Image (cartoon, rainbow, N blue to C red; front, side, top):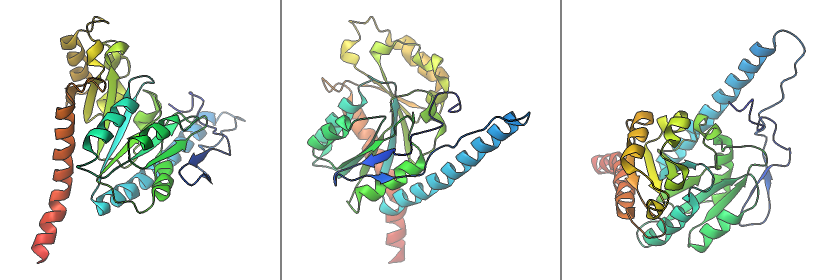
Length: 270
């Protein structure tokens, strides 16, 4: 996967940008494979296995951190231009009186999205990935340090705009959310099945443009079902607010379900 997409050798100065205007350099480079003999394929596989094993270990640590804090972490993935930043803006604004929320934002360059989300009233940490086309568990671990001790109910992780590489990296999240826009066409789940197959939720965004782009909802929903048979499908519009109450209800229900064992355990201890 990432051996072929150009992200296997990030620049050494890739860093996380955040509110304090200083950066932390992190050693999350995927490494370099040198091709000298006929063992090239075996070496590449070993490197990949080592990388994923480390990522999965750190993802479990992140999961434990989220569990200990009683927060719901969501990994939002999509192609560029799906409207996930606008969707997050609307969500942060609509729910700011109900929940304490924060965002971690992954982009190859700039902190434009993090600045937008801070204006919505929630803490936001920018993760600048350089040439790396996805977020990994190590980046999330360090971004959480930058976030500090802020009390959070909902943590939104906006992954790098890419429908290939992010699919393979567990971040420790509770929910994987794939956002697709009606402007992308109904067959997107068939073209990129891996990322949809792992989704817990698929948000079909920009439904206010459905008529203009001759979007066929039934066809799109069937394609999502084929690629992600267990995913919850919701049609929404960040611009008009259509369908967002169902999205907010899902967030409430999942947060309550995650906290239920903690609440029951606390009551039993007394």
